[in-house]
Amino acid sequence: MMKRTSAGQALESLIFDTAATFFLLRARGSQLGVVTPWGAGYGGLLRSLKLDGPQTVPQLARSRPVSRQHIQKLANEMLEDGTIEYIDNPAHKRSKLLRLTPHGEAVFETMSARITEEAERLADGISTEALETTLHVLETLRDRLRENLSHELP
Image: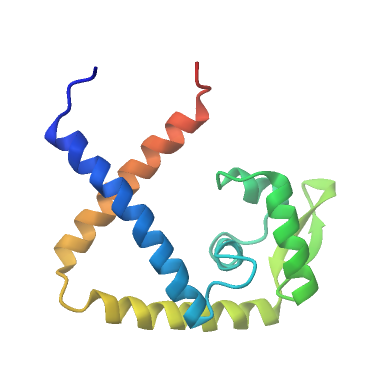
């Protein structure tokens, strides 16, 4: 049996608390209208296209731990909703790029404003230093998990 360290025990608690917090954030996001019936992926995809510009479905899938088919299904819903559109891809004749439409830009701005307002409300009374430390820990954990996921398990 592996020896348990205090750091490992603390991280184990963090993992469970992060999962519980995720579900609460998702429920609150639904109340605020930033988590759509299609899930949080809708807003995440809008954010990716806003911040990183037009991308293909495979590019969007590679940036997340989800399948290309999952992104394609979400993209189809968003295309139908009018928040994104296909444009020609100068690097590839058959693989179109997705980009935000003006309607998508407006939806993104509305979602962002709601998230900003909620973040300010939730941050009240928590020090910036504590939040930045938490962010650093989560980023490090995310990077390590991505590294582990990129290697096949035995």
